[in-house]
Image (tube, rainbow, N blue to C red):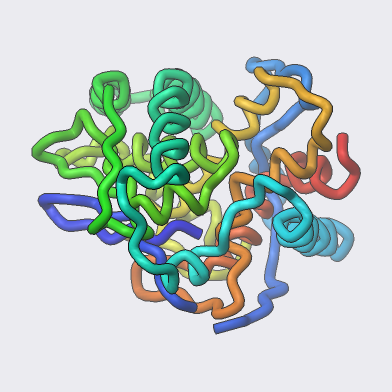
Length: 304
């Protein structure tokens, strides 16, 4: 999971040490993901017809979450867990790993912007949030802010965090440890997307209705109380996962599909699994996201 700490001045993607829990209260309701080579953007990603999952669907989410963490172990480009990153020594900006990560993030920023905009529009349609003129204006205002982000800046002191200062919402700051801990395109683009959603929300809470709506849906499906900052965090993570999946569809390769999908979630495969008042625990985040995304769960389990 990426843990976001927010004030009026900044939002920080923090990486905290966490204790293992296994939660089996899972449910479904979805965005639709197609095979690695392509995606039909007209297909709805959500399903609101059922609020209770069958035991088989619950098991599918659990199996998919296991796949994510197993892939992390065997993948040469697997992300470091966030509790592991927190314990690493500081990394200079000029280190090869930090340079490579910063270059990757800057290269991926334009496509991340484009895919975040598409995902926000898709979620707005799926959850029928564009019905009022006022909310349509807020969504467009958020999109304008997303499209204005141009730069990625590595920073030693940020260590295992990524952050955005709302007084300068054109730059995403990445801690050098974080850059080094996400060696894949899919891992980096998911975090870029996460931060871009926070930028889109801005100081005017332009995406607050989307956060509340997805929080209520996740609460229905999981039985966990997901509101306030937790709802915002989960929405940002959901968009990050959607963007990474779209990126996989745009850039087909010979790598196994489950491996590429897993990279947007692997940093949540922690040993110590604790949440706080603002965040679900990392492993619960994986389960909540897969609960909202049953097609993605099936892709992870079946590889197609």
